[in-house]
Length: 191
Length: 191
Image (tube, rainbow over the protein chains, first blue to last red):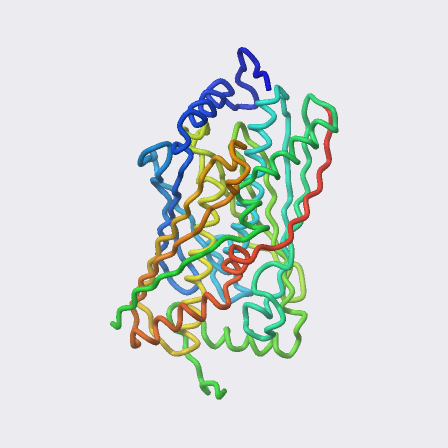
């Protein structure tokens, strides 16, 4: 497929660097291996805090100028103190932000200028599962519904095709719809 | 199973209220139906921001004293500006915070005082999937590994059993390991 001779930055995406990065990875596939990490510490009750800093990728350990701090908690109606979003709300944000980043990148690669992307993501959950009251009720969301509104300099069909491509290549969409293996280890210390 | 006559607050968990909440839901199962929501708006490039505020649950619409704002972005090595954690890092935090909140609640219900919970959650991902370079490579994590360290006033076996129970009743663990249906709608506007 012929590529544009001189892609230009678009949608806040540095398109020339994006294409250069793709070319670099095509030439050296192990650059695509990444490992992301979060370290979490319990604060009190249902409140915990994660620190997100370095990661491995592009052939080496990567540091960041700053580390990110994320608080998770339950709201008072679930006997928490509302010090942060609930863990399941973070999943909704992860999905929305993954699909949206993909949209901007794909539009830039296709030479489409975007003006707006908005989405609302909702998840329905029956807490009888988590509360251990009914084994026929699953612990997680029964389902998630996402509604996107995209405004850009292209036909409706082209704009919808951007989202279809983003969905087809979204890491979080894959995780959330298909599931992944999770291994949990524990070290216990009697105080 | 007999319940303690007078559970006391423990681990920052208001155990009496936790038991009262469980009893209320047992008597009126529709109180367990919740809906969580995130609204996301694209900022620029791979940067977007979610707002998390009200939700439905416990029989009605619930507001919060404050709304939460979450930024998502890609790091420079992935042609982003690092304005926030990556979407896939949010998934790691969601898993850690869900299992940790469960640990504190379950320990409180079992009368176990905890001193510390720490966890590190790592996810390995081969970006050849997301970058569309190899259809045999999935988009999401190949797998996640979580390592917990728990310190508390109980035997090692009892402390490990807390994590096993939290895992068995974790909403995010269920979502991430088993997958859930996601429906995506789009409204496109040609500018």
